Image (tube, rainbow, N blue to C red):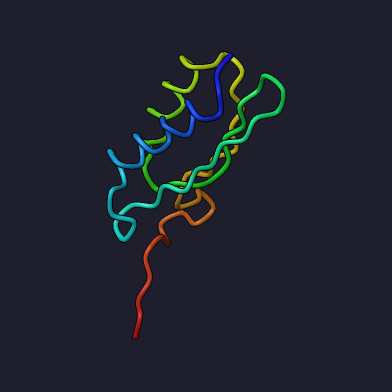
Length: 85
């Protein structure tokens, strides 16, 4: 059975690879465990980070559920920029 610490190490590894500078990429993911299920919650701006995290997490544990939001949200359409005056 996968331990929460294994998943936390994985999260750290993926964060260091894809989002070493939080001013450039957002990767805020936390793990929790309920019985034999690993729960991943958070948000990221990096689809490759999300894909790698999920792929590797499923190799660690067959029971992984996620609630990770990819940003920017699809509901924004093309309006994904801002201006600070």
